[in-house]
Length: 142
Image (cartoon, rainbow, N blue to C red; front, side, top):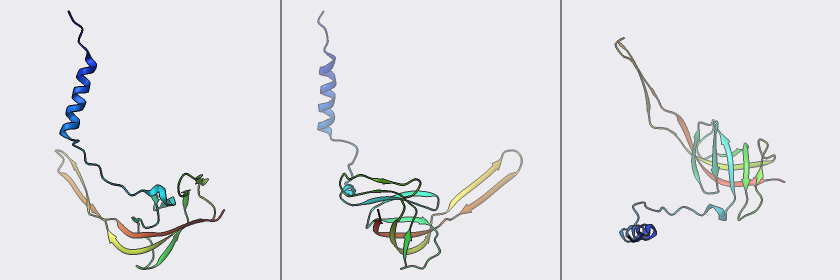
């Protein structure tokens, strides 16, 4: 009896898959390695941002159009492959300037509680207040 070559089967499967085309779509992402990035903390969450990015953060007490400074900068990653500044817990003297674009509310979340055979039902809705900001600059004084 002749021995079957298992490697030929796997290569034919790969070729067939390549001919059909990939089912996943590749989305072109921005090349953020070419610009300075920073990891900030706001509202108990962490966001990695670069100048020009728009993010949603939890409600801040400021007017639309105002420039705010986010001073809880956890890390700064310089352009290219430079050494990152990692804070303990924050980077001293670093700040991220952002422009407040608008105040808004997140979509409504429904919390529904029920205990079967007890006649207990409770429906609670919640809409988080958010602020949309655009990152303008990242600065670090060494």
